[in-house]
Length: 341
Ligand SMILES: *[C@@H]1O[C@H](CO)[C@@H](O)[C@H](O)[C@H]1NC(C)=O
Ligand SMILES: *[C@@H]1O[C@H](CO)[C@@H](O)[C@H](O)[C@H]1NC(C)=O
Ligand SMILES: *[C@@H]1O[C@H](CO)[C@@H](O)[C@H](O)[C@H]1NC(C)=O
Ligand SMILES: *[C@@H]1O[C@H](CO)[C@@H](O)[C@H](O)[C@H]1NC(C)=O
Ligand SMILES: *[C@@H]1O[C@H](CO)[C@@H](O)[C@H](O)[C@H]1NC(C)=O
Image 1 (tube, rainbow, N blue to C red):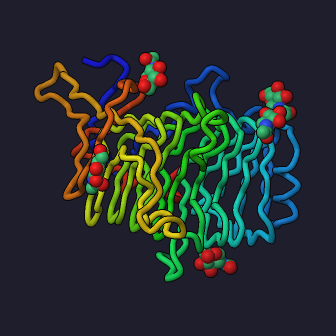
Image 2 (image 1 turned 90 degrees about the vertical axis):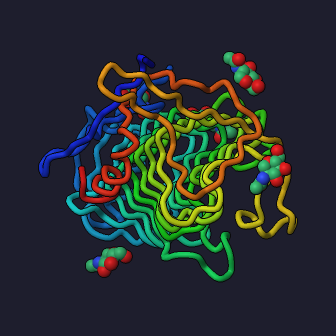
Image 3 (image 1 turned 135 degrees about the vertical axis):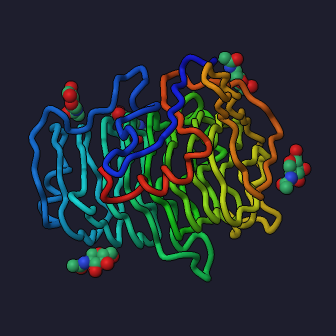
């Protein structure tokens, strides 16, 4: 019995939903739980000008967004902010957000769509960030390759203590890169602690997530047609992978082989780029007093896995609630994305 894990059997009534409160590294970390704008003023914005002004400073603030916001340039979010779409969600179009050299930011219930030539959200040199219940999409796989769009939520340059939960990522090539260069070992080493849980990835290409130099805890995510390679751990990165479910067409669910595959970065060597391998650990089977043991195993479906190095990230350093494997598909489909919080 692994004491840090509470396994939930999620038989949901029509009105109930799973626990949506913050879990993982954005909650349990040496700097303190991520609170965003809590304790500050609350404003509702409906125009781009009002949004720009509300997110810019360092004062704690909760900013509710109503409607569509077509960004004319990337916007940087200041520290101590909660940026939350109202009702069925607000849309961020054309350009995305930077969370750069700040701490304590929450983003929830936003549709982040069709961001060209850059990431939907870039988290750079920042700590304590919670990305929750958003939808990211760009309409599919452009004929001119994976770089027509960039990442959906990339986490780079020594960022740390981040949770990415209950998001719906779909119709996009490169989803979530953690650490954006193998030459950045000295910058990134011992940072990039990210928890990914209960995300729904559908019709995506690569990076669900792909990590270098850090630690990512990847649990209870649903992958449907994640075509080329889902979880990639390279350049001495460590992943702990528990209770995830793969459905549909996926070539490789998990790899620690250092090769950056041509389907991910076709503009470099046609054979791919070689980096050092990463590490992976899979969840253990939890022995439970109740009738049957509960499995934290993953359901890989028809996808392959290639674990070349088993690491020492065997247990998450916090309490979290695992959804039983047989309930993951139903629970994640019902509760990820917009209009749920
Ligand atoms: C963020 O808020 C905290 C208090 O919650 C405050 O100590 C800190 O100075 C704020 N950060 C900035 C950059 O203003
Ligand atoms: C808002 O954006 C969504 C997504 O792109 C679009 O479907 C919708 O038509 C837009 N609404 C308005 C009022 O422009
Ligand atoms: C990282 O962010 C901190 C503020 O948290 C800042 O002092 C520092 O200069 C930033 N470093 C880089 C390389 O941007
Ligand atoms: C798995 O990793 C090994 C290196 O340890 C490599 O030789 C092999 O080609 C990899 N398999 C796939 C399908 O990439
Ligand atoms: C875990 O493994 C990494 C890679 O081999 C190593 O650098 C690190 O020191 C190990 N950590 C512990 C606590 O043993």
